[in-house]
Image 1 (cartoon, rainbow, N blue to C red):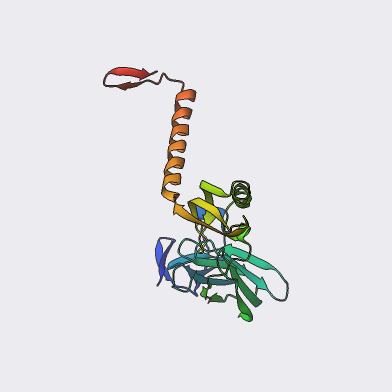
Image 2: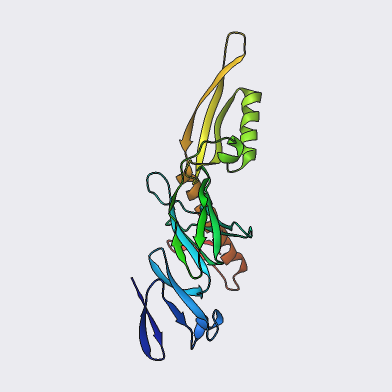
Length: 251
């Protein structure tokens, strides 16, 4: 894999591991680098990137679950063991992360994502001057120890659900937003009731849950559309009129 860099009317091929010196810059690039800067060449998510001081190191990689699926928005911390300085980045939609401008030294990589156990790469990751190392890590699906935090997007929803169930003995069509095990969000509608013994003591709870994510998203899209329409009509300096079959219905 290589990229073509144009400079002074000529074209140059660069590949990961190469370094280039900036002799002339223009446009947006000129706002980011200086004349004479030494830039390193590396890859990120199958793309060639040219940037960062060549005297600094970088760490890249991909975070996946046990099935090999990419984990987006995982938090990756690259910590210098000697100085304690950390660089924190997040994975993109394809599970890739990239931490650049790292000083040489020994590092520790820690990865975390909602719904997964924390995976810690052992210390001993030695980065030398200009080094570019790749660490792909797999997170194991975790167990939920704090239901209010790990399952409910809004922990107050859980308290409201419990209060209704305790006061009435049942809950119908209770809507809340929750986290799936992979960390993604879902809207559900709950029906639940308490099952009691002959003495009236609660033995257990039973109920059902229905995925209503599509409906909630459609409702949100409708609200946003109505808000945009209202903003156009109310703040437009021009006269706005709506007609149906040549009959004025709003104006």
